[in-house]
Image (cartoon, rainbow, N blue to C red; front, side, top):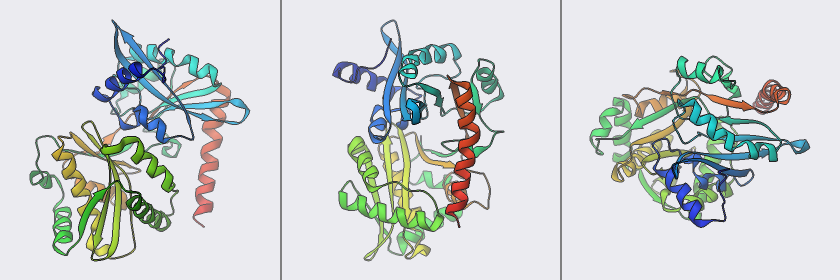
Length: 347
């Protein structure tokens, strides 16, 4: 059984090297991400052929009442998911984790585009899917993602991929005196969190603690930056990004209610994008959107940068079910409770 021995430094180093150099890599499949999610348990399994690691899966373990659990591999596995035999062989390595933790299911949502062929491949092999024709509120992460591709661009040419209005907002923000800095200091994490909480209150969304942001910074070190946009003595916006081995992730951000007309978020994101270009990153991942609608402000903001790149439409969630009855209860009852809480919070 290829269950990572986290006390074996050589095994950990070998595992990390595979995950970080795979073309199927994702920041949330990195072992360090499980350190960030310290309120979940975690295990890491991998598959070897001819002495080489060929597939890996970082699993988060959510404890439930009665000793049961849900296993979740965010944006996993780290392998070609169209190779169903490889994936099933890898998932067999996770069976011991499932048994030990009385898992109801193992959920994974790879960064791979939807196709009828891929959907049917998993459906016909006994997996349960939540995909493009299902209730999107059931998804842990949005299926639609906005990605700006950076390859073969410098900081000038990349702007031609932005919408005309976006370019104007960036230049206007700089011209009117908005400045952007970055650091990893506790002070700037506090500033980020304050801006983030202001934004969350404005948009009525759930939030993370300041300790959570510090954990990301501590886990990813030099690959994590906190960007702050200011004008004169005023804090306007802040964001957190991770530069993950060629993939830049825009993870968290917030803005105050001060001088929003100066478009600080546009200039701040451009500075983050420039960091990606400087380090040879392939892409800048703006994260998910819930719908491709011109009436959705989040989508329109991200679309203004990704004007020449089509939104990524992923397969969604794929579930290996261990306890069918309890799985059906979770999938039918929990979303209703979540929606009820959302309605109550908006009152």
